[in-house]
Length: 228
Image 1 (spheres, rainbow, N blue to C red):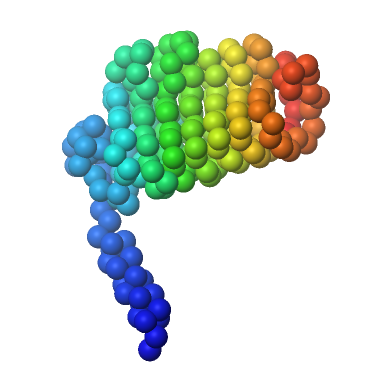
Image 2: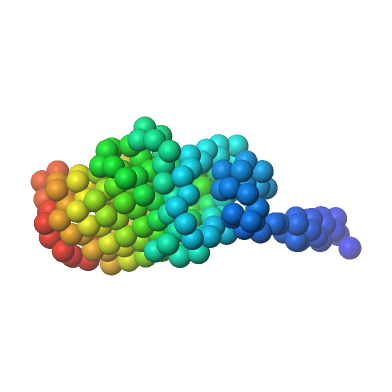
């Protein structure tokens, strides 16, 4: 057997062993969400029961995060104050999954609710109420089936080739989607009553658009429902 084959087999065994050691944490049975976030290992899954969880989560040590709520209609993450995000993470290219959660800022300010950096990102079936929903920096992945209610901004992409699909943006105070230096793909979203504009594009990047009418300065027409 060649050395390359031996190395491949050993790598597969190690990967399998690491995967088999992953833990599933249930909150509140395993403690508060803040306590579990302090101790979970990369690759673990956190299952969050219904309720209102007041947190300020900061994970900038290279761990990924898999956080799944029981139901977005009943599982709320509420910030501890109005000047810090509910969740800040730098995953250093590790997977980050947020699913079935409602992020409730309880204010109309411009502070970001989530700051997500260097992640293989999946955000699905989540709600964002108030604040600026998310700053996404140097991430890849998908943002799907979410709704944004009364946010200052929706999703702000920086150097992040994300797919933004099947989301609803309602009563956005400023911009629903901002993309800077990102070859984003934006499909089948609804934009209702954005104060300034639905989408703003900056930087010399290709930006696929289906439907809608571009306005001055690459800002798409406001107060218009269309599919892009």
